[in-house]
Image (cartoon, rainbow, N blue to C red):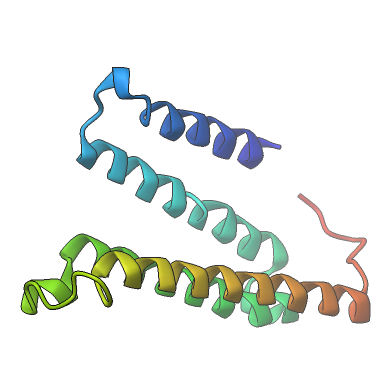
Length: 136
């Protein structure tokens, strides 16, 4: 419940920064979105510790997929922030191939990958059941 409440608080804060009357700078908005996304690392690390680390088969199965999802999202963010393609080809990528389009494409890929990770988790639970002796 702690992580859910914290994410909700961060969400409300990030959305409040979008209110035009507050006149929040673009950098503040971007930093708040990055912090919101990066916050997911904390519960992931907590989950790995609680589950017993790499020795647990579900951790071995899912952690690499979680890290890959963050890698794809990080690449999308890096391309968006650096305006990489159009930086080198000014005026040539105004309609197709701009950093904003690449950002959208990679975010969709990351979400699709995350969706497939959820399906993999469901399949794992259907085949292995839940652990009853987990102590928090």
